Figure 1 (cartoon, rainbow, N blue to C red):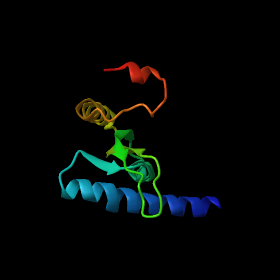
Figure 2: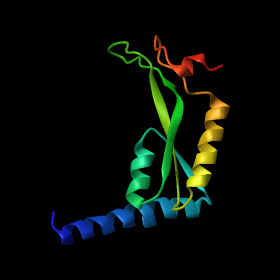
Figure 3: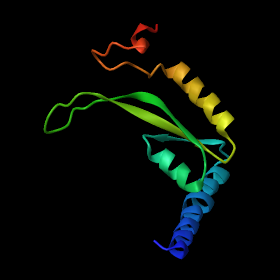
Length: 116
């Protein structure tokens, strides 16, 4: 990719992810933070140049129509505007404390397993 193509692609990222994306959504709904299921929010925030933090959100059942698969963890991403890391970290920590979603994998002997 040439420098010109890169600058054009970056300008489109900023327009779609920041100006018409995160900024427009957060302004319209008067939000400080957006919560996303999974890692998608981290990618959107990164394209806008904004911070995000991901924490455990719970366990998803692995059962499908064709076969049973193990349950698996699902993270949630908190994304905010530039320089909002302090707010994101406070909210992510409060979320973790309220939900207790961080669980060790079955059969895994880890320091987290000893936590109450």
